Amino acid sequence: MTSILLLHDPDAAMPDLAADFSAAGIHVLGAVPCHMLVQEAVRRTPDAIVCWVPQAHDALFEALALLRATQALPVLAFTRDAGVEALERALDAGVHAWVVQGYAVARLRALLQLAQARFRREQGLRGAFDELNQRFEERKLVDRAKGILMLARQVPEDEAYRLLRAGAMQGKQRLGQCAQQLIDAVDEAAGINRAGQLRMLSQRLVKLYALQVAGGDVAAQRDLQAATVLQVQRRIEQLTRLLSKPTFGDLLDGVLTAWAPLERRLADAPRAASLLLLDAQAQALLDAADTLTTALQHAGAAPSLHVINLAGRQRMLSQRLAKEALLAALLAEPAATLAREAAHRTAEEARQALAALQAAPLSSVEIRASLAAAAAAWPAMTAAIDTAATPEGRAQLAEASEALLERLEQLTAEVERSMQALIG
Image 1 (tube, rainbow, N blue to C red):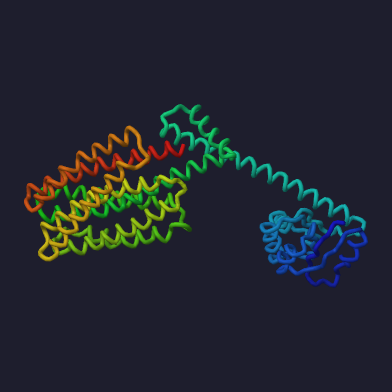
Image 2: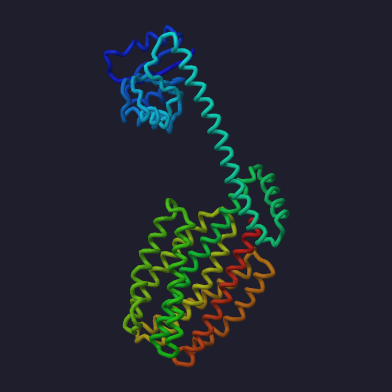
């Protein structure tokens, strides 16, 4: 037996709906007011909702719209409101039969069946639309995943599609699901790379600031500093678009909070008296970026994401080492001694990180070549550190640190590309 839940306001002219529908062979579960509709519909699970609505009102349409969003059901409504506006609002709220001045016991069963038939048709159309939309979205995912594979594996489009389909079959997934997993993993790698760059950029900014304080080619260092500030801004914008705000928004906010005072101080002319404060602000940005990078690594599904983090950290160490050598030359004691001691620790950490990268399982011809180039660039960097107290030594340090950074950026990019190929 079909069951219904009645919805009506107090009305002296209302017929005995429960008796009339029961006489028509319909099981009446009870009657509820508008504000209880959704709760009672979920609890009693009727086959349909029947409304007695002499004049349409906002509370009715709000209740029906909420019901449609929560647990869609066929809705039959009897009314004396013949307005077109009420009819349109009823259709928008999910009413399937809006009967104006047409209540009759003999018609109840047929009208209820009409509402149920329209509901089934609506659900069928909605299901077809959802399936079509899903296929369209999957097509976009597949096209993007193919592009990733074509770039990472250096294969044509048909081979990339074959690889993707083979992965889906092996994982017993839809093609779109497999494509989404590939895209997610690549985005995770990109997020780690970009967040890791912020660590490096924080230290590079202090290095460039210190070089301006020391004199020499101030204009060139100022231009590099302006370009580096722009890089930080762009990386933060990219991460804002790339990362899930509910998941990583608090960590990204931490980066923004740390960056704001550093950005303001960099807008002023470089002064020796500001070096220590600037370095502390840069360290706050480094710490926030490192927290974000580590969180992205641990949240990722791919097991080799730590290699991208490690390669990115090597970039930061190169700039931190150059910065500490400059601070040791420019600061008064005891700050100069602390900077020298920090430089020794950073040099040892960089040596260990390079050894770890050379032993990492994620490798390729390109990665090995980039590793060799980076290893070859380190001696010039370490040699310049010992002469940072002289103008010539600082110029050599500036050149060597930028050359080493270029090699390490190339290495990290190769690791990310190799990561994409491995995922594919």
